[in-house]
Amino acid sequence: MKKQFAVIGLGRFGGSICKALSEQGMEVLAIDTNEDKVNQFASIATHAVVADTTDENTLKSLGIRNFDHVIVAIGDNIQSSILTTLMLVEQNVNHITVKAQNDYHEKVLHKIGAHKVVHPERDMGIRIAHNIVSKNVLDYLELSEEYSIVELEAGEAVDGRSLIDLDIRAKYGCNIMAIKRGEDINVSPAATEHLMKDDIIIVIGADKDITRMEQDLF
Ligand code: ATP
Ligand code: ATP
Ligand code: CA
Image 1 (cartoon, rainbow, N blue to C red):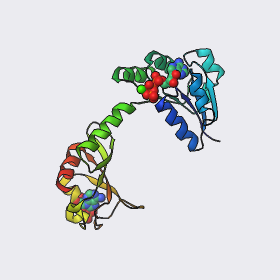
Image 2: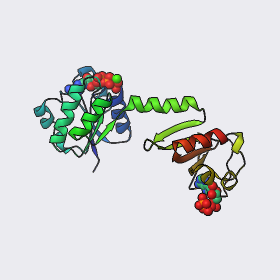
Image 3: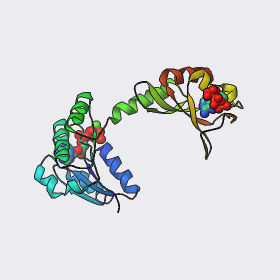
Image 4: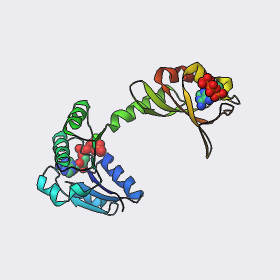
């Protein structure tokens, strides 16, 4: 059976989640208090309804407890976001993902039982900052305060050199998880593998080690 999703709040964030889920063939119920927003998503989502999710009876009548995953994308109205989340938790929804507006909001959402809290503006800001600081950092995924996975673009400095030759793990404590070359991807490359200029290298390691390696080699 298809997974059933509900997206509450059809702003830019919730709207794009709704659209992407629909494009991936998922069943999506789109919910907003604003009728114009709902009309906009009527032809995109499986169902689109005007509803205020801070009203417990409304949530119940939508059968929200039967959805596999509910995404709360109410941004500015933090009170509505918290109240909606609380009721989803009380109704035992399996997966609840909520967009946080700031760190306090995030803390409260975790406390009341949201399963996952996302912070898209902050996270995208961090990503873009990494990208601006080093033009070789294409993408960046924070694993913890200290560790990350980074996508780097290979330049002249590593062109034609093997992993043994560069001795990356021994010198920098980082592991190359994969090398992308055009459409090809080499996962867990052998030590004898050579890098080529324009390859995209996916590295896992401590931030300070990745930075050191990036400064020397990329
Ligand atoms: P964006 O993702 O565009 O940055 P935002 O963070 O600015 O959005 P808002 O515009 O504040 O978020 O809220 C997103 C949507 O949530 C709005 O379309 C709003 O109408 C809807 N919304 C707000 N409160 C409720 C509610 N109680 N029930 C349902 N939808 C709501
Ligand atoms: P290690 O001494 O680090 O355990 P190893 O004995 O497994 O390595 P090889 O796998 O032959 O030796 O690799 C030799 C060296 O090449 C490693 O020490 C490391 O510096 C580098 N290397 C090989 N594969 C990778 C990789 N995927 N990412 C980063 N460095 C690598
Ligand atoms: Ca916003």
